Image (cartoon, rainbow, N blue to C red):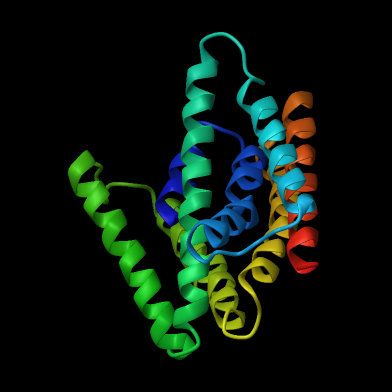
Length: 212
């Protein structure tokens, strides 16, 4: 989940990345139907189809030579979302038996090991970058990972996975706004429309799940 989220940023905007990655409530619902024999009403399925339609809008929003590059980013972000859904469902069960700090240590260590293996296989150097790059890497580790994700992991012991994942929609909005001011990253109109459609579908599906 962590590595796919970052890899997708090479191909799509921050807004598109966050909208797709944070569509995890949809995949959580499908996993619950497939493996936990859960039954959902029409609202959940309506939300799923609405979100898929929004994803199609985003996937087709680029033209020319950039289309294949953006499509790869969409695939990476969606795969990261699916991986995050499995992570949330498993985490929900594990956190009932394991304290927050050991759980966070296991999760982050596993993510770091997978990332290191990818660096070795791809031949990507880990040294030779400017000091500012390592500073922001440290900030990335400290603020969104250790603080942000640790809080998500903590509340998983007390709240349903769908409730935890809906709060990620706030991240989508905040990240999109920050991207405009920090990186002058203005999403295109089709991307804005597709993102709004996906968020609407996710919220609709979550509302349907909570009415079970």
